[in-house]
Length: 410
Image (tube, helix red, strand yellow):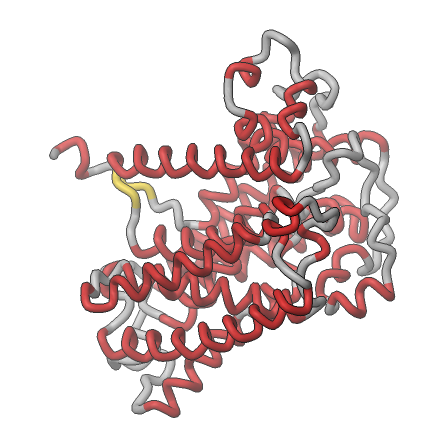
């Protein structure tokens, strides 16, 4: 229909996503419940305006440098590359499954089992330090790869991809860790959005999926916390949140409280270390990090300790100050913009790397995933796929027009 033709939203573009999320997040801080609300912070507003503008500028420069997109989104993966990727994913899934079952054995069960059996342990007690992070990286890569292959409409393998996606998603749900579930889903969302730009009608489907996720998000919060819906006690009696399932308030609070904490800390005063400390902790394996650093120390002063997420800005501000943070975020934006520009112009390698960095952009309102070991090492998964292709047959060199791994000419 005519009303569908012109309106397409490329929500895979990281600059748009960053700008929209942080704009909503900042103004959401001004609409928070009275007990959490902070005054308008001009310094924080300046930082956001600078980084939002810088992201648009950086992306535009890369887009101009690499020229117009000449590859249809539906043709980013050739038949040969899809076959190779399917074989690699099968092997990666077997490796993940074996190690994941070992993790369950070593953890003596799953968090969802502990909840229903009355065990006092929680999701933080599940997993093996460092190994679990490695498994999350593999799981995210497989999930994104399955979404990519599913979208090619390969009917013969459609059930296989759905089966793998279901197993991976259920494993995340069984861990009762909303962060892990969100990280996993965003890997798939990134691939879905980059291959299939949303039309106007698709917004309604996306809205329904978002509502389902919010309800599940709230349910997990209520299950994990006895009487979890008591979170509604934070809002006034006449608040609209009292008329909605608790998931909506959970989602809202998780979305705005990190920015509230940052705004509050800036107003109270942050004395930067001007040295890498808080921002580099997640680069270390868990077994080393817990020994070298005190996990109970937050990079900034919190408005309310019950909500201790501080966004990706907090560790950067604590280490480098406002100006240093603005510049470091600019460098991160350069990396993400480059990955997206190359991906939509036909480079399968960059397409496979992009989901982890897209996830880091979306979750920048919660945490500094850019400097997590899983994200930094994520390109190794795409490199392992490229090595697999070299060992399984002829492979295209970067920039060569060939049916395999991964790059078509820009």
